Amino acid sequence: MRLKVPPTLNQFTKTLDKNLASNLFKMLLKYRPEDEAAKKMEIPYCIVKGKSRLGAIVHKKTASVLCLTTVKNEDKLEFSRILEAIKANFNDKYDEYRKRWGGGIMGSKSLAKTKAKDKVLAKETAQRMN
Image (cartoon, rainbow, N blue to C red; front, side, top):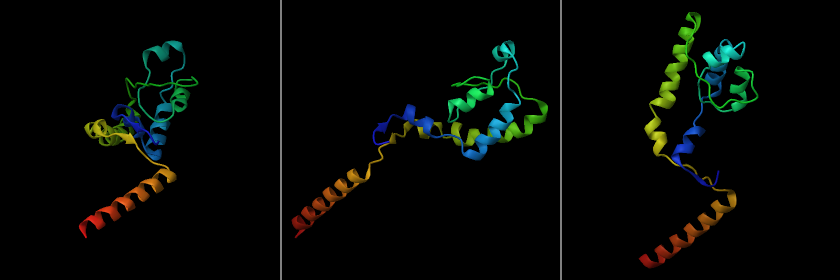
């Protein structure tokens, strides 16, 4: 958290909110592959927090990537709502996230030291002005 994180890695800290992720996973459970052949033909894809949650969809311990190739007619309305939210939160903000560095959060001791340095600098500038 204290180190600066490059933008390419920082984009993965911007994940779906809890409600949208739970809706997505409820829908993804309907698309679980039944056997090895089904797993190879139709593996859903999405980037979310928690590889173990993705792995549970495909009957594995963890999975880093899932890809949806088709959606059933009964789920198209719900999927379109989820897709709109994903586009608004991720695709439309891609350039913004790509340029922003993450991390850089200092601990309490570091904050106290920087505040003390700022006070000293402020005193010096005030003395110079007089």
